[in-house]
Length: 124
Image (tube, rainbow, N blue to C red; front, side, top):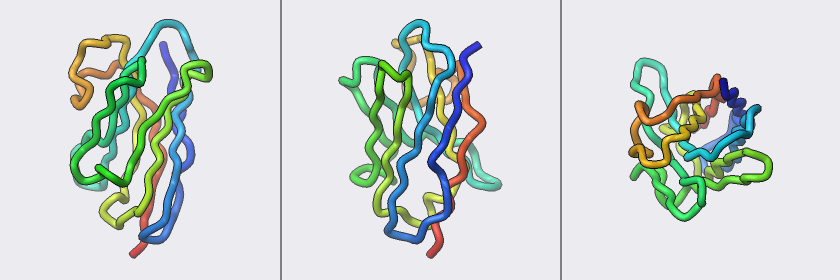
């Protein structure tokens, strides 16, 4: 059982920045990583993903140019740097990981391991 713990969320004003972190408690194997977010009353949507190698990254259109996903293999940690935050970015952000490196990285069903979420609130 791989445990993922997100951190770095908080309350920021529109235009501000946050860096979310996701640390995996168990480091065996290789993983693709993803970030998803869920606002109240809405589905959990894909935000960003990165391959284990770091050679492939994916972003939902609404965050392209504002978000950067990265990972530190040695620390088994993935990051999501978010800039120019907008009120519509407000959501509970979840980190996810999968050992299936061939699974589509933008799909919730591809991921086996999930964190508890970290809240991002952007005031207007």
